[in-house]
Image (tube, rainbow, N blue to C red; front, side, top):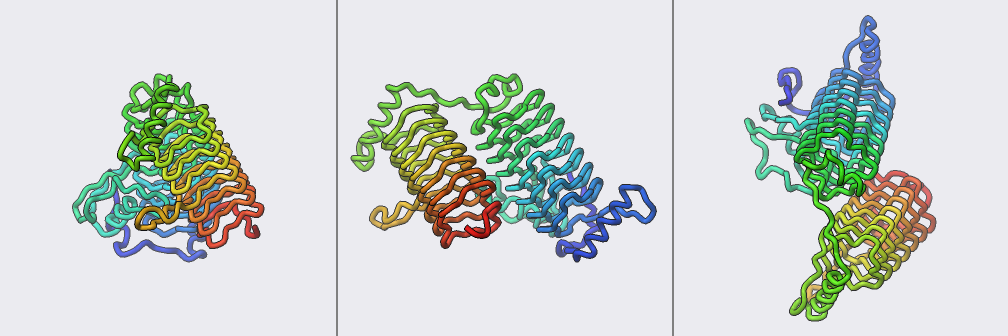
Length: 449
């Protein structure tokens, strides 16, 4: 249980320091760390530090319980053994930060960038919060509500938090980017890594029992000596060799379902009959978690097919008809999707890293059915790292939080697309059309395009 001194903090609102007062607090903290006379520990519990630039600051041993640090720049900051439990670090930048031994129980880091950070031996267990004052209720409500990045509310409270209620808040890394981050010996029990990018992260000797890794990308991660008992990696993208590790024997895993040529051919034939008869004959293709890697499916008719979590790595899907298909969390790394029709498809958290989508159609499917409805393509939190998207049509697509770093978007059509929170670092956007697109919190997009 996280201990909070209710008498030590006001109950109405988070305190916002002036730039001068914050600078003075940091200077006094430096003297405190150096054990010089006049030094004073930074006591920033329940302070609003959102959007503050704290890059390279030394906040070791600082008191930041319940602080708001949304979108704060903590690049290369030092937070060794700092008290950061129940803090709001959504969309914060912690690249190369040192959080060794920090107490981060129950903190929310959705959409944060934590690449090459050190979180060794930190305490990131879930926190039990008993509501005794209004501010605690605000934290619980805020952390469990729908956010502008993560729309999964399955763990939300059924009713508003009330005084005396008890809540377990998991440390939340949903959709955080943590490439090459060091979690050696870290206590991550019950942490939520849904949609997190954890390529080449080091989890050696980490405690991760009960952790959730839905749609997480764990390729190249070091899991040697980690305790993964009861951890859910059933929808994570792992290296094939990782599935043979002893550390995963007690985790919840689900291997891809093999599909013979005959079985797949039969499913496609039944699906075609289902489409042609408007559902009166045949059977809709249900290929969830199917192993279709490297399959030749060029021109395949998979309109409205169900393919969530399917392995389509390096598959040939050029000119495939995938309109209105469900490819949630599918693995499409290095797949060929040139000129494929993906209009109105659900591609949330799908991984298209290094895929070829030249000329693909991901705009809205319009004027559908008797109600003449429009269905924009949902690419929320999808990954297009290093993908070839030259000439792709992404008009009006929902691309909130998508990662286009290193992608080729030459001549892409992105008019009226939702691009909030997208990462375009290193992307080629020559002649791309962004007219009418929403671009709040976008990273790496040149001012002049």
